[in-house]
Length: 197
Image (cartoon, rainbow, N blue to C red; front, side, top):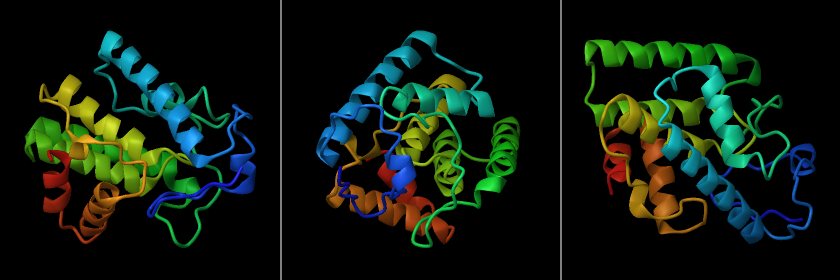
């Protein structure tokens, strides 16, 4: 199978790509369809369970497994390989520590009301993407985690994230990637606006 990655997507290594469970998939478009179906199943589970205890490593892994476990053998497992120079993410050995620190920060933000609910959800999402926990699916996972923080912890509505699929190439994905790049420079307003667009 040849993967046709949109701009800003994390390319999979050959070993990671070989961990595809659904061996009948031959195109990236088919992969996106199967992944999206798996994500719908995860959302159904979330709607039934309404988890509130989400700021921990076990839940983060469980959600990723629920989102991608029917498609990828490595779903729910932190990446063990370093990312290529062209992509984001902390060194893989730092993932558990950086994630633990992020959870501690978010809990402090909530306790002290350091930011508005929208700001907390977007900052949480951004930092999850920046850590880059998994071989793939980080943006989709982080957006869903931001939504869960808003809905199940802060009592706010989920974000709209542009109102369409961000996994495909196009103007909407470009706007999202540009908003993430602005956040890299500590300018979070574009990402806040995009989250509610």
